[in-house]
Length: 116
Image (cartoon, rainbow, N blue to C red; front, side, top):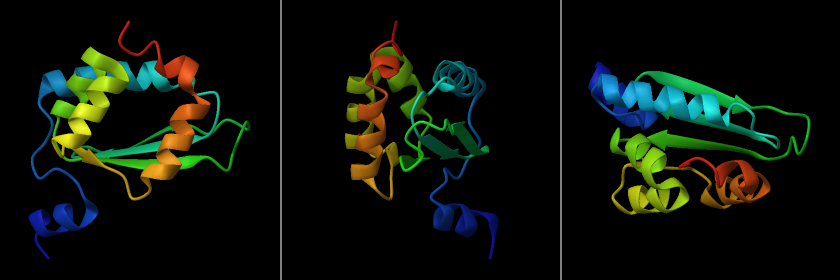
């Protein structure tokens, strides 16, 4: 199995993130680190990034697979609307969108300030 095949099977982007996407992602991860309920795992070309894990609502856990670095720019620039538009463009996916929606709803106060 070559690395491209492995990346496709894992749902990862096939090319590394650019430096602006890495900076944007890292800023978003810092802002989301205080996720008060549940746990979120974000997978991209650079690997897996776990956020949260708080004792509050441990049953809430979701995974996002980033297929294009545009997701990070959309989320940073337009918050949840940007994330939705990015999903429509196919820049990210989740194996369980319902669980992801539950996790986001439980953390709505934090998420409302992502694009501040």
